[in-house]
Image 1 (cartoon, rainbow, N blue to C red):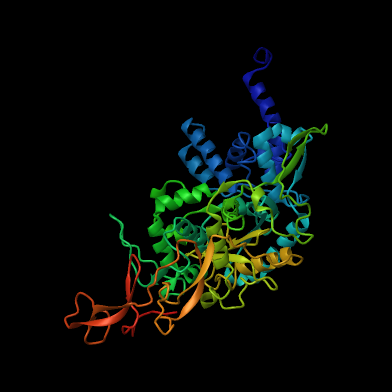
Image 2 (image 1 turned 180 degrees about the vertical axis):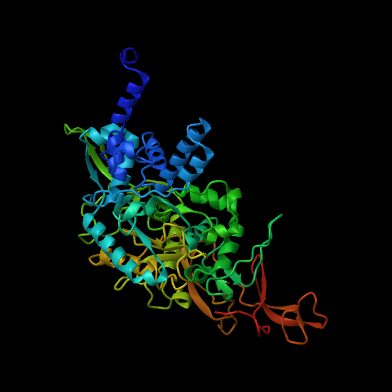
Length: 581
């Protein structure tokens, strides 16, 4: 009937005048005014191509929410126009390379990154038109006082980072036991130009060393290693068939000799982490990461051992889900943004229920959540979760790299676990930390992926001061809640260097200096305090002999080994770049 009454051009005109283009824009004329401040008849080719791509998924391709997706969709439209001979190759290239300027969206929305995030979730469930016109009443998890404070803290701290070429930042705060998103600050200012609306919390960024706790957790959970396992932080190259040797270096440019897992993780040394991933294997680590919420890691063939140093991209929202397994005694919790949805008539269409839900979660002191009621997938055992959390709150263990009074320590609260991460190219700087009730992730960098200045160092500048201030705000009324130690965790004395259990002589003397460490029962080390053995050394300089040394002799030395390297503890190391701890 429509086709009998109207021509094809008239039908197309009606469609273009009514189809949604995102936000309050219904029809091409409103869309043209909203995004570019001009009549549709005045649109340029690149502008028209961008708008033509929006109706398929206005939120997904919104230039405010997802500028990369918007341009990608625009390029598809331009390519189709080229293929169908509507434009010339020259017009195609010129339009494709034209950078567009968009009107700033109205600044009356509170927590806009979160609002658009929730809107996209609702549209998937109820459809675009019902969300836009259906009169739905939506109750969310957001704590607006926290949101406003996080936005203020981020803006203030970014001002102090201008000299480091840091242009943007993001903050995500969740409650691990329920998955609630309490605050989502996707950039420093949503209303500042086209990239301000870009939500970094849902974007792919490299996590740097903040991925390491998951790598070590996999190894501890599989009982390959313990917190006392000794790694040799010495020059090491890893060979992969058909590829150049991979020879990682530490952030400080030094090697630290024998270092146990607790200190390797706490100080974020790279070489032990790479060795840990080599033991886990990349395919197993990718599978484990995917199981706890990091869906961005796809084909293991795309990654190498640098994955443990942040060589793969993740979303902050994914990372929040993965990290939640540590405060949740091993269970990772999916994120929740919506508590209830009602129709215009008051009918409850959806309601989130959780026995750990607490109204006004930051305004009164909270005890431990009820771990028995945390529903989700088990990422690691509760024993592994405890050990990782304990390492990440150990201020003494990380003092070699960060000192004893860094921004990783929250005043008045010792039981806060935290990990930093900075990519080698200085494009991404993270701090991720938590207690049983709060998980805060902070990122700083630049939307255009330009690197920051070298002065942005983990724990000193960058994300850490922002994270520290947000955590202070969250914890000002909260008690210090230490990770609960499972009954299957035992503590014993181990040798400070080898990590083995010391032997005890007839006079009661221990065979080595010791320290205290926790273990999953059954994984405690064996006695191994005596490291002496005969090895070849150079007669010229008393260094461990190399194959090419002509003048060698066998000597009794103290020797340490891990699966990849050997280290003579009491040989001559003069001239080597070692900082032995």
